[in-house]
Image (cartoon, rainbow, N blue to C red; front, side):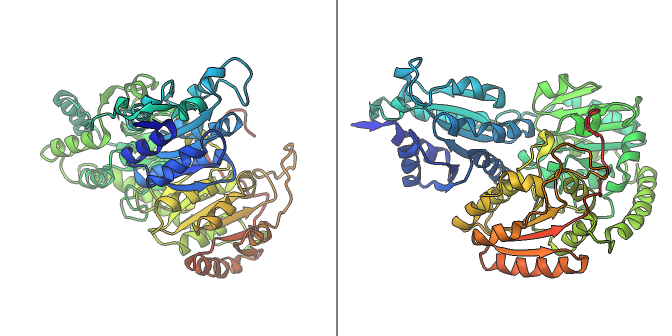
Length: 545
């Protein structure tokens, strides 16, 4: 019996358990999309393929498995690349399928012909082209496995039109066997050496990231942190491993903790610019570093690591917890914790006054405070922008793992709304709030339409400071964008809209908007904020002003 390549796409997606795809229609993928829908895949069509890839990334983070996006040939597929690059740097598993011009016409100047595979290789961890229809299931299954193996990341599979529409003998199609990959554990010697370093330390800290989330081990790391009494700091994407309002949480003392730590355990993340590559003066030049990562490349490329342990973050945490139980005394690092807590308490008391500013235009920190006090711990918070991203990072805590999304280490603007829609598609039972800068919102603003059409109600709050970043001296080229009435645009797309200029009006507007979201209607709250307010944060580049 004969079967078409596009039908094999649908069957293969069902085989790997894919249930949602983000895309824009077009040749030659339309029949593959129909086949995917017929095999149980929910199709969410978006307004730009960049957003499709970003939605797939958020979906992956919410569900702990690869998100799926598709593009039509040529520009449609190439539009995926910004989202895939963001996923690559952020270590998020996304599977991208791209239609392509026919293999048989390659090199003849056929419609939308371009070497998509060459374009995709730099922005993915694995990219391949299907040359025979019978191999579609094999390569789709491999794509999903590649996305999750080792360090998670995006992958790409090129699907030429003549391959998609080729008819093959169904008996000639090979389906991969089920595969179980056991996460790698650390050697007994490595665990022993790490425990020895902990026993000798006076001021240890743990740096963690999304690797602990992909291993499903956030609760186990939280237990280890509490039992050992070691301060924990995470990447923005790894927040929520422990409640950030708990007594042992010390975010305001981060700089001191880094600067004075004599032992740094890096678990499930890399030493990127987020941690200043572990270099002095942010960290003591005398501190010892232990890195636990499933990817050997992350260890050997780090500028300073004294002990590298290749292993699954969760598995190694379990090993350390078991070994530490009989060797680390409870309260061993109490003096260190007390020093940091004193700093935390002092800074927190001073910061609350700034958060409560009655100034007009509204200070972004006041907006953050109102959101902090409004949302519940179960809310998925997405933050995207420049000043508002930094202010939000400082002032809005996270309490559950995987419940905070932002652009990650690639710093891609425009992820906010797509991330919010993708998160809602993955977790319809959760409230989703997107806190956006006005510049970043404009990049993918039409995805409000996607949220409306697909019944994915989210609450979007915009910090409207009139342009890109703060600019007290008004000297940045192209900075000013004006004060766009985004809530009116939202209303035209079927959303509820609110416009706020006074601090006291923020909470009532949030309450009205949330009531609309609860009834199934996406809402936008457009808040005018102070264009002069510039968030203090680590300088990520020497060339920024």
